[in-house]
Length: 313
Image (cartoon, rainbow, N blue to C red; front, side):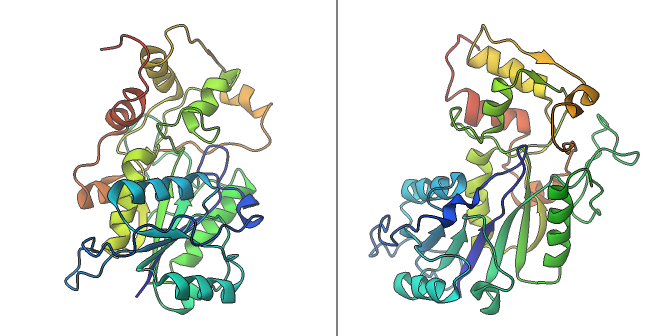
């Protein structure tokens, strides 16, 4: 049985994988590692050797998944089929014979070959479908849980993502991961949330839940191996404000860095659609993976210390 990970496109404040991945197919043999490595198993009783088939080599997450496989010595290959072409996907699977399939190309079909095969689908989705309300006030520490109904309708993007999440509830083999404002240790990547806000002329100062990819992306691979399903708030526990992040950036990266704040009302005048601001309750994920760090601890360990350029303690 194959296990599939699917990555959906997202807003400027959430995970963003563009449809450009559809334009240039990548040779399936381009990154195939040693196929004889039989000691790497999926952790189950049958000890099946692992081999991953990944879609989305040119995307942010697809590239990170490949590097994770290299670091762990997991044999993998990038697929060349277009995701809307069932025959090409079947050819890729037949050629590679993977144990797991990861879709990080940001394009999905309804239905697709993986769902028709009844395999596990882990969908990288978004948590930008909520906003602070009376039951979840800003600064209260009360986060939205997995079973809560999305309440943010400020953008067409968020409305459609909430609709997709609701539809996916009908499939028992789907694992939906709600990412928010993804951050990685690559501070030059334009999709990195930190990179974005350091380049803005002004930023709002609101606490939000966020996803540190360097810590959580490997955990998503483990979730696939455990065949976990259902909805998961895929963020580090706790929240951080824009100013808190930029304070750390100044402390660890650039002691001369400065920025200006503006209000939500002022921001609304220069953006096309409202932004989602919320706290997601990460209790469920923390219960399954107790080692997950809080957002601030993870940010310092995985992002700022590896990139440190100042004399910060």
